[in-house]
Length: 388
Image 1 (cartoon, one colour):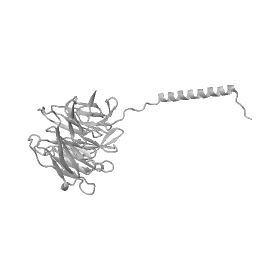
Image 2 (cartoon, rainbow, N blue to C red; image 1 turned 45 degrees about the horizontal axis):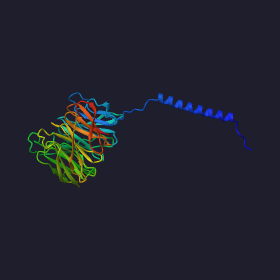
Image 3 (tube, rainbow, N blue to C red; image 1 turned 90 degrees about the vertical axis):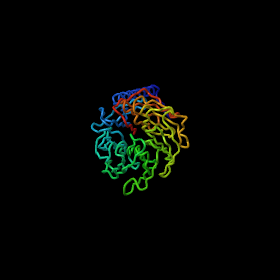
Image 4 (cartoon, helix red, strand yellow; image 1 turned 45 degrees about the vertical axis):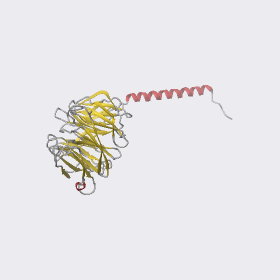
């Protein structure tokens, strides 16, 4: 025979359960109020600077992707003119040029959001202006602008560097007597498959293409090198590849133009030349940097000189640039030396060297348009931006 529980006992049990739940919720809430709030400052941006006006060198920032504002986390203290940076894939080391006449590079460990100097090495050339790690992380390359040369270093498993292992001196000049009196190597860029290194030489109007190898011996096979010849006086400076590696986009500093090439197994063929300023523009052209959006649908370039803007083009399926879609956006500062696009494509940040500010633009992924958020990140002479 089943027995029933008296009604008053059921009511009392329900009341006790309610009290237990209420007290548990109150305790959890109280504990949460006592616990420290999680940090919202997630460092994600490195900034390289020129140090002649008081900058401390390299800055670690937290960039807020909701507002476009940034918060300083840490910085170096003694490095000189760290004008270009690269970071290892595991974020354990940061490497920088020291753009001085007695060219050097510096290696830092990057632990707990702080940069600690572990090495300095000669770059074997004056005014190193670009630095890059190989995709396999085993070699580091530096472009010496005034020296007109390339220097490479082996990178060990702990992030330290060997002494210079390969040195390549460029020779030659071009038609602009003031700027092209000798070789001026301005960058070191890997093809997406990691098999080739391209080095734009502003002084020679030439881009050298070196096969890259990881076996014993020098990493760049100079005896198998080929080249791209730019228009006389163009001054190739930086370049970027399409995501599939089929196309190269070269920004030419002295003429403010972009040359497009088809690329296949170390050989480039010319496709198109477009200009980053209106046809009526007659003043000084001084183009600087070039990047594709992460989806590869839009190309952006920066102009210094008398323009101080970011120019954008839509990329056509055949790799060419649609000149009908050109857009001009003021950088809200002077001398936009370098800019970067966030990995999600939603932000474009530009470093205005001579106005001591970094401007954040919200980027429309569908149209490529840039919108200033009215936020100016103040920093003395910023020249390199690196999201990581």
